[in-house]
Image 1 (cartoon, rainbow, N blue to C red):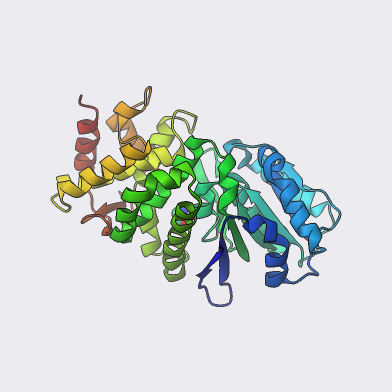
Image 2 (cartoon, rainbow, N blue to C red):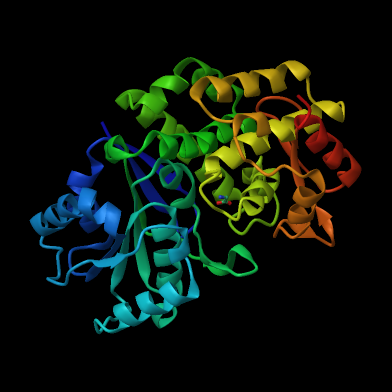
Length: 372
Ligand code: GLY
């Protein structure tokens, strides 16, 4: 069963098609969206190519959409989101003699989607592109909403453009081959949607979260669909993050600081950092008298039950120096006029933006976590 979520953005609106087996219909779905006469260039990474490229090529072939050129393969991993690989990809794409009507197809996780999206944004001043996300994180977050870009030596995602895809194909079955740690990394973002504004969804996750993580097909489809609907609503209301889109950063201010403290290495995945960050955001909200302690406890309990970390004690070797973490937060792109904007909460499903959090309170909450 396939479901369609619409991102409403006037003439740039697009569909996200969610469900098991969507990849097999990719040719038809793409042809229905952009027609059969456009030239496609598929870009993926070497790991994803082994698992999913033959199925995609077969689906495109069946509709007569394959142009005979082979897919462009990138090395897997975060380091690929660099100037060096942007240049290589741009030159490879331009070297194929493209026209403005050429469409790039990003097959892979967030790294591939962000880099290909940015390449599409700037090649010939803008090509159409299609996202075929193959990780849970990419399906529920990075492939939707048009944030594209690369990393700089000054930080993650600091160079980029808003460039919306024409179509997102989220085949929930392709995640069957994902390592559990990667599934959990995406699952933290799923939980985030419940915590931001949908307490019923969080309640559903408390019941079915382990089934989503374990790969139960209906549970996974439902979780991806509801997450995409939440993101589509937020992006439709505030595409360029002038205000409410920043709610999607729940747990991310703390989370990015933790990732930076780990040099964005393997100690902590993005989702693990966000999970800890969401616990901290709830704890801080409780400490400030904004949210009930019982809600913070429910969040912590749920993340723990599915296997996500909730604090430093859950991640051996995690560097936890409150002052260093605060310094990382001050360098984040969410800083405005020198003040860090936090997403705080009045309870589950009631997140809000707070631009006036005292750094002494942030330090206090970080210090409390490191106590046995
Ligand atoms: N990942 C946050 C956003 O798309 O705004």
